[in-house]
Each structure stands twice: as C-alpha cells, then as structure tokens.
Length: 130
Image (cartoon, rainbow, N blue to C red; front, side):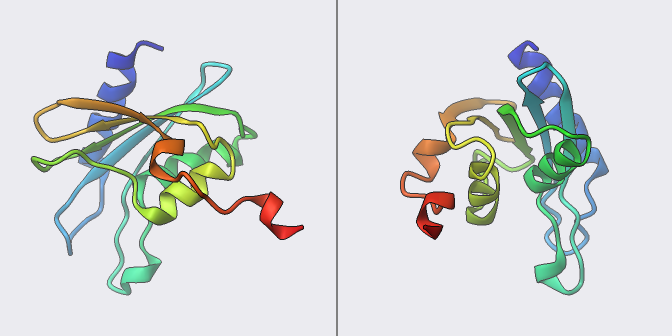
C-alpha cells in the first residue's frame, strides 16, 4: 500500500474517535505483510485507565482476524505536534513486530517516519521471561 493511502486511512479514523474527555482524536492504520490493513481509533472512558488507544485498537483487530505480521502503522493526531505512540502502545506493538515502521502525523498532515526500535530501544520481550 502506498504511504499516502495508509496515512489517509489513519486520518479518516480520527473522525470515529470517542474522546469526550481529552478531545484529542487519534486514528491508526496498521498494515500487515500480506497487504491487509486494520484500522482503529482511540476510545476513552470516564474511568481513564479503561480507555483504548488507536494503535492497540488496530492491532487487536488484526490479531482477532488472525494476523500477527505487522510491517507498518500510521498514527494520526489532530494537534500541531507529531502523534507518537504512548509507552503502552510501543510495548504492545513490539510483541508482534519489534522493528515496525511507524508513520507519525500531526494535524497539518506532516509526516515523520521512525521505527519502533527507535521508540523502544530496550523493550521488554519474551526473552526476558527465561
């Protein structure tokens, strides 16, 4: 999928966000190695820890559909700063793809491309359990 198409999907998902508390809508589009794409948006809750980030929503949809081979995710926020994945999302995504390509957008549509390894250089993984 073209980068422009993946980022456009992420931006479009911002409109579906449920964010009455922060008013900070986020959309995500996650691409798998077979070309399939799963989307998500942030979903807040009055009990703040119960909320769900867009990145984890997209990844959970992919896993539920039988995919675990993530290659790239686009994350779109509406503010002036680039929308980077939070720590919890970084760790969640690293479970499946430690070197995932991460496309971060701000509200102006500007793009910054990084890898998950750059965000989480010493992430906790299954190797730490042995």
